Image (tube, rainbow, N blue to C red; front, side):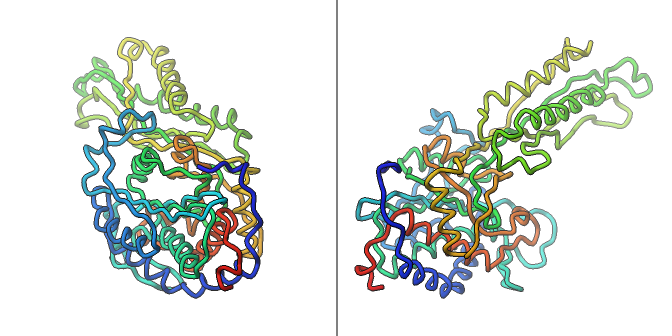
Length: 441
């Protein structure tokens, strides 16, 4: 990986940039059609292979060096970032392409994930796998999260290649899997050596320059009780009732964390609660006339980019333990805490980082206005790239963000084009372009 501080070059010439932006605008229909082609593949967990093979062929059209492989779980288990509930990645390959630069520039990763969440049981207006273009939007599962973003950054790279512009720095394009379950796919690519001086994940953040992403830990707390007939409930111990103080303690923990973490990552300070913690699922009891002997509480704790997973787990465990010790029953029958085999890593990049400055400048050049700085409240492969890949990563992509994972999911086509324009400008400004005279522009 080339050192950011050692590489310095002039910003892309205005006439070159202007020609590239016009060329991106002219590829609007091609961009929409690529997004639709990707959406047609039902890439739920374990079903990504066909789409990844299709996309690998598209990357080869760029003249890139392309490799595809299924992550090796046994090999990755040594990595501190590894976590997955999968038994294997059969049928779920990752894809990586490298466009070698001529030298003297900075390297850049364009990252997107091919996996999508299940469409769910609710009825869709149109089939989630039969994308429809209507009212300036592309509808379908994965349209905004995040096959639209993948199509946008692919077209940005394709325009630059088709125009014969030679980049100085390497451009790497990654298509991951498992992002929706813990980012094991991008971890496998990092392990294979895919790192760079910077990265853009074209996640659905509504064209905001998102320099921080939260992480999360999912937990399950088993609260014991003692079964008894409902007519003599006093002879048992109601595990649902015993759960109430624990729920309240977790609510209080969220507020404690809000106060303590406020100001630590300023792009989150405008949110009522930046790093939510809560119980979101309760299950207890087997019959209305039986005192429940077990209640389970399931939920998540959001991680600040400055926190370690182990520290947040310890904080939750200490809160539950202290609550249990204050109860005569639970002090002798301690609740048990388990963690899901899913976890998302947080991360952030300093606002003054050279890549953030380059992206902001590229946004202004492309869109004629200043970009909005933000923090991401969902999770992204960017957190793993930052924390475990040593690659400063920013999320920037189309919207609307709140349509991710929803029924009748869609992406705004204008946002797709804007994403592609800004990414193209960033590639030129960051990686460095050959002299305009060499491109024929």
